[in-house]
Image 1 (cartoon, rainbow, N blue to C red):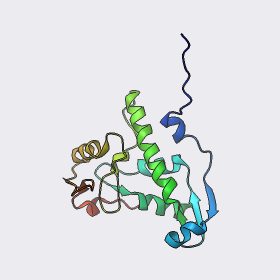
Image 2 (image 1 turned 90 degrees about the vertical axis):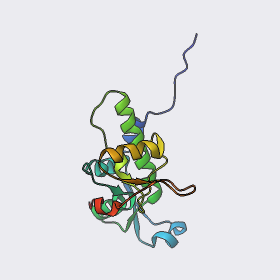
Image 3 (image 1 turned 135 degrees about the vertical axis):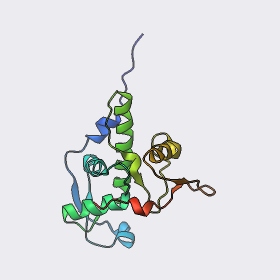
Image 4 (image 1 turned 180 degrees about the vertical axis):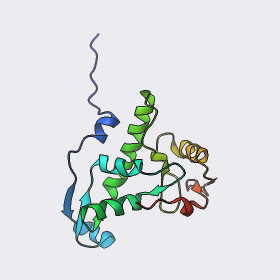
Length: 161
């Protein structure tokens, strides 16, 4: 029997994939939403490093991550698409580490949307994120309709980076 080798990268490999971030001009198709000027395309480890700074009981939004990366790199904005993708990679890589026996991982579950809603794309979905956040003292309201659950009074716990 011939064993098939998987060409799929692990989440850890994806997390460590990029050597450096890039600064580009904001593309015309994004200028209506982001304005003009320069935009950072971060590397996944940059996103991971900021999420790691979020202490237990605190929360962070993707917008705050993007703002901090833009400030640190002297640009007008940080790419929302790649930042969102990299938050997901950080989450999946952390779960991969937990499965491999690591005890301390990047606390990705502390990342919420700007309006306090939970992220259905995280490992285990909103149920797993809600469980972890409840363990850290947060209160979760059920989502209405198709909307994911939302944290109550989340603004009080938002971290400024």
